[in-house]
Image (cartoon, rainbow, N blue to C red; front, side, top):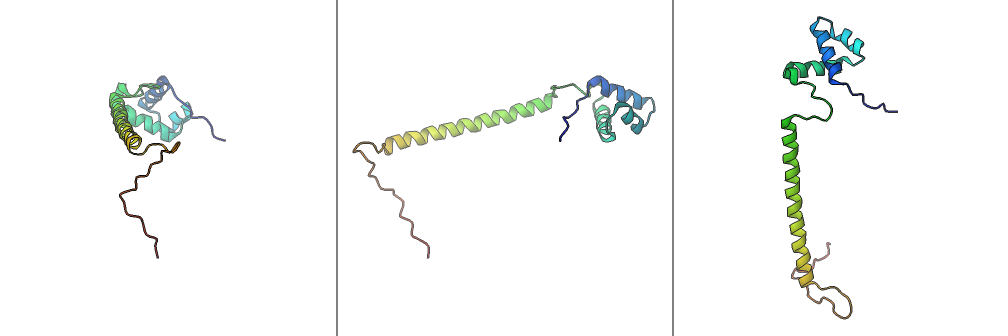
Length: 120
């Protein structure tokens, strides 16, 4: 059975970093805060790279990550708009050139493509 992923507050992470600054070993701090040493190393790397800006909190993304996500969403919207326009044109074409086969009015137009021959 899978355990839910545990989340740690910014204060817990900062307290762990303070303990490391006081000279405690990573193993001691990991045991003290009941986290894996690998997770503690990730926190330490983030702390060294970003200082006070590290550990922004739940749901807070950096500006770069947000702008990347926005750009990706805008690209997807543009792609979908192009697909919708294509489908509208295709629907218009079929309405104009291939009327529905109801009543006695059946499409009798032949395809301009030559018939495929069977393989031997």
